[in-house]
Amino acid sequence: MTFDALKEWYDGYFLSDGGSLFNTRSVEKALPHGTCLNYWTETGPMNEITDCIKHNTAAVSEDIVKMVARIPVEDEVEGYSASELQLNTRDEILSAMVVFGFLSYHDWCLCIPNRELTKKYQKILARDRSQIIGGG
Image 1 (spheres, helix red, strand yellow):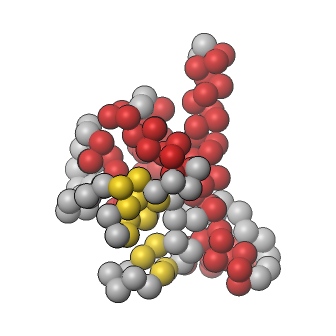
Image 2 (tube, rainbow, N blue to C red):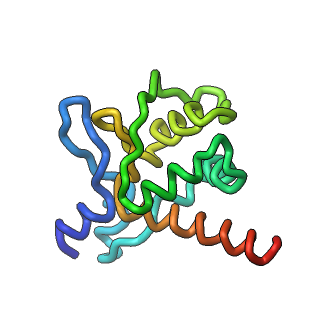
């Protein structure tokens, strides 16, 4: 496993000074296994975010489709918050996604930080598409 592979899979978070940060939990799991996989995205808060995408809450799924295509979404996320999981509006949902680490926010743009999360979002979107087509 190379540093470049770890960077592609787990880097993409930003510090206030613009420096980048890796998902340390996933790196810690990848190193002894010798392979990059989704080690982190099966955590609890992702379930709530998945529901918001599935139900297209406040058109969030369109934002996710853009970000999966590597198109950053411009937004002024004001005061990141997820204190009570009030996920009713687009801003609340996107803010929670930043707080939980499912999105990265830098220079007024939201993006999916790394391959680990991109793969998870692709899976969610594909599952939702198949349910719509299949009627279930």
